[in-house]
Every structure is written in structure tokens, then in C-alpha cells.
Image (cartoon, rainbow, N blue to C red):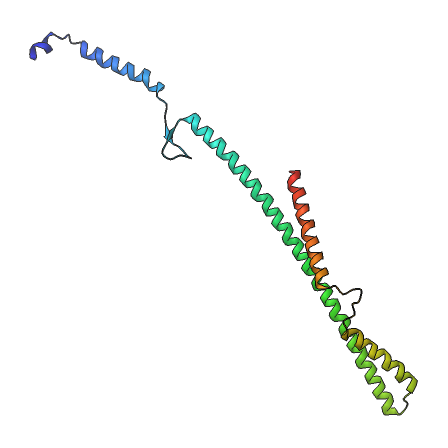
Length: 179
């Protein structure tokens, strides 16, 4: 073996090493760098493939964001319609209670007036007759459930609420379609 090494020129190992170094320097740029894919973790991707994945995923995220925003706007408009309807119903109920309380006050004042007149001894029979008829008419009016123009039946209230919901949904659909 020693005989083989003795026959090799001293510059040959340096030449071989220099050629290997030049080959590595020239071959290194030819190998593309790779990383694990963002979408498929079992796959290695290049810079161009990674950029494509990022673009595709950004488009998907934007579409999902727009869908969720329009869904949120629709739900918010539905909730606003429910709030408006609830507030209107509450105002109607308070107004109805006010009317009932006013009628009770009128009835109590009338009975009090009749009692005072009877206590003074100045009772007018014809006035009592008119007062009795109007009082009984008012009681019958409330007892029979005769609808006043401002009262709303439960069916009418539901119809109004559904109409408000439909208007809110149509408004939200129009606002999202304009975008």
C-alpha cells in the first residue's frame, strides 16, 4: 500500500479536494430549500409552493370572515328588531295599564261623589240613573272584553313581530348583497 501513496504526486489530493469544493459550491444553489407544509404536515414544500399555500389560505380566511360578518349583521338586525318589538309591546302594555288606572280613578271618584251627595242629602235621582248606566256600561265594556282600537290581540302582536323580523332579515340581506 505504501507503494501506491509514494507514486501519487503531492498536488493530486489538493486537486481532488478543490474539485469537490467547486462541485459543492456549484451544486448547492441547485437544491431548493424545503419546509413542512402549512396545510399538509406530512409534505415538504418549496418557497413557491409555500407562497401558493399562504395565498390560497388567505383567500379562504377572507371568504370565511365575510360570511361570518354578514351572518353577524343578520343576527344583530334580528336582535334589534326583537328589541324594538319588545319595547313597543312594553309601551302598549304600560299605556293599557294607565288607561285602566285612569278608569278606576274615575270610578272611585264617581262613587265618592255619589256618597258625598247622599251624605249631604242632595241626591238627584236622574243624575244617579245616568251615572249608574254609564258605570255599568263601563264595567260591561271591560268585563265582556270588547276590544278598544288601541288594544292588540296576541295574534296581531305575533303578526307584527313576524313582520318586523322579516323586514330586519330583508334589510340585512340587502346590506350584505351591496358589499
